[in-house]
Image (cartoon, rainbow, N blue to C red; front, top):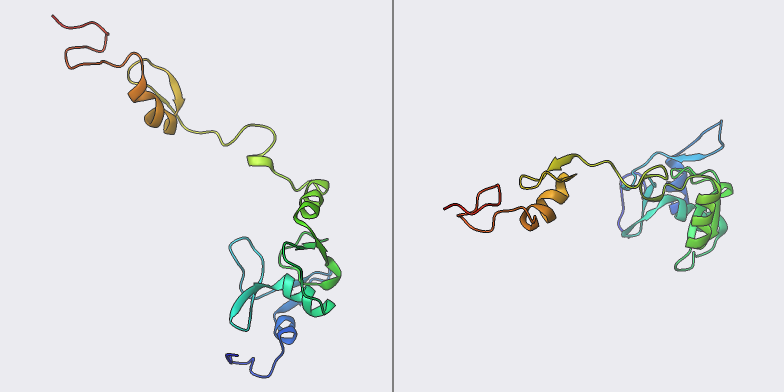
Length: 159
């Protein structure tokens, strides 16, 4: 095991608890160390990085989390490592919990389909479409597009 400054004699649980501040309003034990790209706390366990809430669940309950199981939060706070706020569930359980609590945001929302894209107009026929679609799909396939050098934009062959 590699030794790190200030952690030579500390257990994994002690190192975890040293990086926690208790939020008096929510009773969440909020992780103060590094986080991953989606906001979950990260802690080194031997030579690999693990999410802090999973480590907290294992250390406080003295169990190994089975493969394909999630450690879910009752508080919906990804920084929380309070074992009283954590529960073990499947991905389906976690998704059902998300929907039940109204945190689901299917593909950008329920009010419209996707994000509004900037619009552009075809040079040949005037059709309006999203910028990325005009250049990628429509312009080269436009039925109004001239087919030879002798064809003008009016669609008539020059004499």
